[in-house]
Length: 258
Image 1: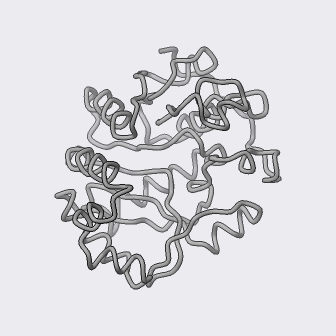
Image 2: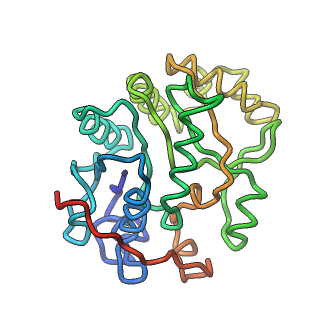
Image 3: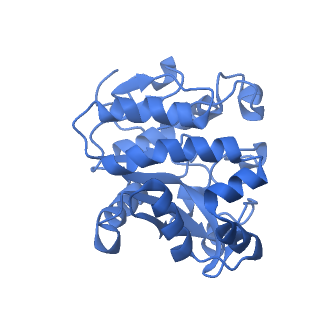
């Protein structure tokens, strides 16, 4: 679980906490809601916290590593810790999706591990605009227009060990190219970039391009659980601050302390 971030983030500053993952919601840090969801997902055996080792999160995770200055650094440290276990499959999720619950994560993992997705080394959750609007009508989200519809990216990724090997270099390249259109075009391919700009790209086309970059089959899984994409990244998203929804503050007994 990625729980890092800058202490200068507007939510961290507003909550007087080291990172927005520790923002108090209903008397608990936001990350605790996501950790409760992880704990209620039977498929997850080991939880790795990537971020501040804060007393309010004690007992919720099995391993803890510090977050890095960049997303790729945090991923590298978190996945490195996970790879040190005997696990062959991994779930990456961020700490800022407090509405997610255990059944939602189970549905995502069950779908990502079977059926048409069984051969994939990476499965990324996406949610369409209608599903998002129905569940969170008061929250503005960013959507990408594709031939298949309008989608927003989720905050959950399923990976195999082969998927991990290909992911980290790709994330680093994307991060470096994020403000350089020419570099981004070289990485993604001009045809894909123009397809995204014009809304003519399809999910299948993007999957093929991602698969070539990763060296493993990459798939986008259209989730019906809008909460998996409902990240809290601005004050208006905070439960009780305009969203009209509060996550259930239910914490199961911790498995063990770190």
